[in-house]
Length: 354
Image 1: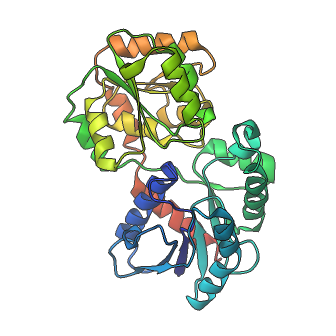
Image 2 (image 1 turned 90 degrees about the horizontal axis):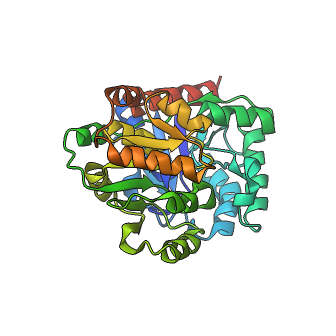
């Protein structure tokens, strides 16, 4: 096969977990597959390092910037189709929700969640119509769909009447190495984009552990100012830190030093940070929602994300306990590999051409 990879959506350091997903998946595909050819269609913001250094991978940069969303969307529907024809692409892999709807080779599109339908209240009014139009088009026009969890697969059935292959994310081996290098300090770590559904305001209000700090790291989403105001109103000062997006090596350092990990999200498609914390050997407390239970099983402490009292109790429990996770959590995390994700993704790409 000659496989196109539609990476036009990617803004390095600007799209959160979907960037980590794509970089790790491409590396795993390169390690697995020496037979098929891959053409990675990038934008002007993304450097050539997105494509692995393998003979069967190369970059085809397109004359578009992802930050200019209308132009990027237009190019995806027109220029990318033409570029795919020039490159003799057999199947287009779309890892970021959207795909060329009119023309071009068969599409296989990844849905990380359907939050725009489950919780439209979390979206800005001017963004929502584009999400509804483009994702509906992708769901209906793609020959194959990939869901990152069973919960997302069920939503695809419910809202679009389409079946999808469930391909879970993997976890980087570096996190298992961190488990043997930990030097815990008295802070709780939360890795999360600052968006409304991440439930960070309720976490901050529930944070009442006098000798502990709270460190929240992740993209400064459009709920950032509200979270900053709340921290100031509660007088938390330096006890609650927002780092913004940080390089991967710095993130590894936070996992090494954190006492425990908390994840209060009310909605997820998968929940990669929980898996990372499990692998890194941290005690974990997280929301009792289907995707996180799908990942963690019975190996972590759950709480009701709608209850500040329940969150507070969980925080006190992980703060007062030993700063190490369980062997069961690490063993479960080890089941989620990027090698498996690559094999299953390649299977979906092959199936699209049958």
